[in-house]
Image 1 (cartoon, rainbow, N blue to C red):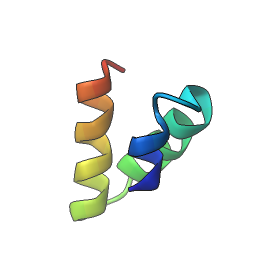
Image 2 (cartoon, one colour; image 1 turned 135 degrees about the horizontal axis):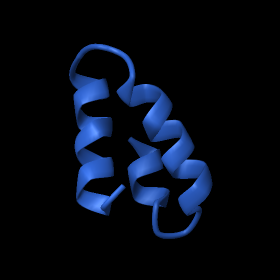
Image 3 (cartoon, one colour; image 1 turned 180 degrees about the vertical axis):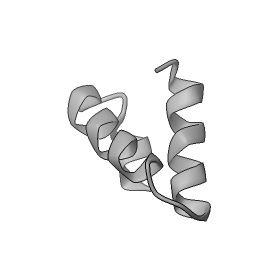
Length: 41
């Protein structure tokens, strides 16, 4: 989940990646959604 670590430095790009991944199914999608929640998206 490199995108989650990049939220602070490349916010727009990282959010776009996480939002795309969060649309899927499975653990990685869940974690992407949680990272977005914690970031305040």
